[in-house]
Length: 246
Image (tube, rainbow, N blue to C red):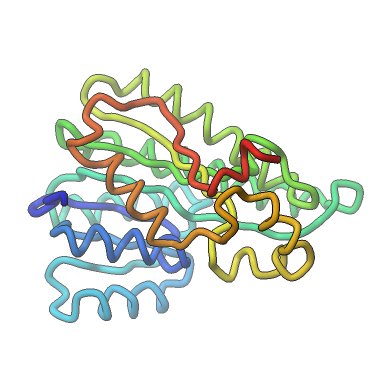
C-alpha cells in the first residue's frame, strides 16, 4: 500500500513483539531499517534474519536510558544511510510493583526507559531528519487510564503523550509527530496480566479478542506514510474498543 523505498527507519526496542512486527512491515515496504535494542545480540540476529544481505537492515545495541547511546545510534545511522525519515520509539520496561512497595530505583529505572529514552532519542534525531519525516512514539492505554501495579510505566507513558504533542508543535511543519496507544496485544508482555484477569478484560473489549502486533505495525506505518500527511499531534488508540468500554 505504501512505498518506503529509499527512506530510513530508526526503531528503538526493536527486539520486542510489537517492534518486530513494525520492523518487518517497514522493511517489506522498502525502508532501510536501523534497529536498536538493549539486547545487542538479539537485535543483531533479528536484523540478519530480516535482511541476510545486511544492506538494508542493521541491528545495534542501545540502552534507551543513555543519552550518549542515543547520540551514537543516530550518528551510525547518518554515516550509513545519510538521512532519517521515520523514527519509532518502542523501547519499554513493564514490571509489576504496587506503589507502596516501589523502591526509588524501580521508579527511576521505569521512567528512565519509558520516558527519558523517548526524549533522548527524539532529541538526538532532530538534526538528521529529512524534510517530511515522521515520528511515532509508542505509548500505551495505561498512559490514559493508569494501570494498577505499574505506576512508573503508566506515568511515563502519560508523559510521552504530552511530550509528543509538544514536539509536534516544535518540529512543525518539517516533521510530523504522533503516538499510538496499544491496548492488550498478543505478546509476552501481557501474558502475566492475561493469566490473572484475561477473561474479564476480553469480556470488556468490544472486539472480544487480543490485538496482534501486526495491527499495531500497520497503524504506525500509516502514520508515517504520506496518507497521514495532515496528521500531527494525535494519538491513535489501538485496543479493540477496551478504552471506551471500561
